[in-house]
Image (cartoon, rainbow, N blue to C red; front, side, top):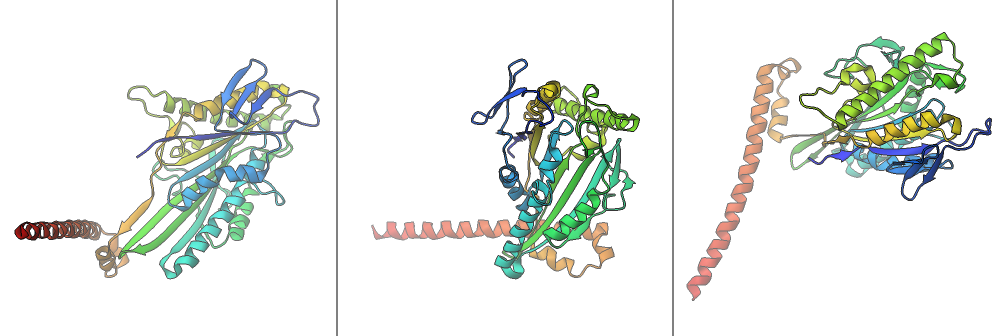
Length: 394
């Protein structure tokens, strides 16, 4: 199974009209390089989007990742950067100018509906969504009244409410209702600053039959809008906002620490995913089973040069993380399907039935291999017979 690096994209926020400060960066979209003018340090990205980049351009870049999720591979897209750098605009956007999340949802429903129409009754799909927020190192379920929940290390979605959705409009309405409960606050840096990390997840389940075998695929698309890092020298926040900022910064520092552990492993090291709620949720997305794209959003104003440098350092590090994305497909033979018809729900989940089904499936697969080998042997025999007849003629 091939490994591939996390894909890292930089999006430059337009200069603020409220400040006469110049820019602290120079960009070269052709070489995908950003240069910090304060020290001429260069940072290489996979792609650089300049200040005039549209939402359509950004989404066009991540479309291939979303297509792989539709085809049964886990995917993650998350936005990282200083507060007020445009992360929520990139991920969610507005009613008039949609970001990645609503566009991704629409793309998925269009693709699966088209596939369903093309294959008639031989293709079924189900889509469900979850929405969590991490606020001050506590996890809340945005689809269940913002109830506080625990995240088991074995299954991070075990305690989250999962809602099945039938259309992109229904999905967005549900997610919007959830996001209205997200913690935001007006700060000196941003009128609607996100004070929590938001993690929206779509789970796709598809099934079809081919050669009397049932093919099931289950994949997830994680779309993450991280809260922004803050520097106190540029803020004039109240006590609560400072407490929130402290927790946000701590969470992001842990994320950076985990990434450094992944790219610079030591002997007998255990990656410290459990050190924060955020890294627990992102553990498959960073060094695990997922295709991942990180969009770093950057302030170009000179007064933010220190924070911009820190964001770019993060981008270079996370770009070195390697993931191994695996097709999430499960194939069930016709023998197993026939047996399952006679099992009651209670019996089907019993250890006896599980072992029986596993054995039947193994025998079915072994039978298929024997059929293939037998066909090959018959082909060889036919060729041998032809050769023998040919020799007899001479």
